[in-house]
Amino acid sequence: MSAKKVAFQGLLSGDFLRQMLLRQIGVVLLGVAIAVVHIANRNGAERAAIEMAHLEKDIKDLKSESMDVASQLMKMTNQAEVARQIETNNLGLSESDVPPNVILERRP
Image 1 (cartoon, rainbow, N blue to C red):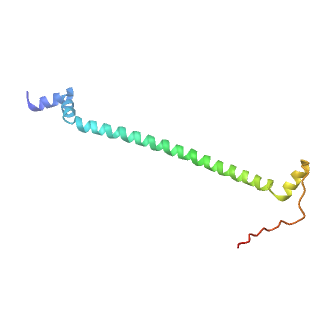
Image 2: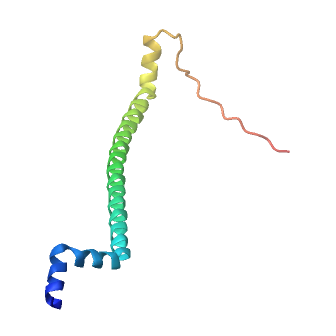
Image 3: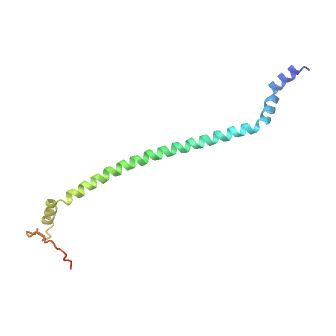
């Protein structure tokens, strides 16, 4: 048999690929390992991006809620609103007509 015929038979039967794969097994395993790490890294990055989007939406909602609560608190602590609440709840309190006194500390 000629060398060409043996080489052609090896190519058709798969011996050529098997021998080449056995010689290059380290490179093939390295390529597979790099592909697995790349896929895992991309998956982790996508999960982190999705989580960031959810957290940013939550922050936006909480800021809106905080501003709403602060607005309600400002309205409730308005002097006229406090006086109205005292009247409607019959607490028996009234506004003082006398201004507050300033207390000064005398130093010796």
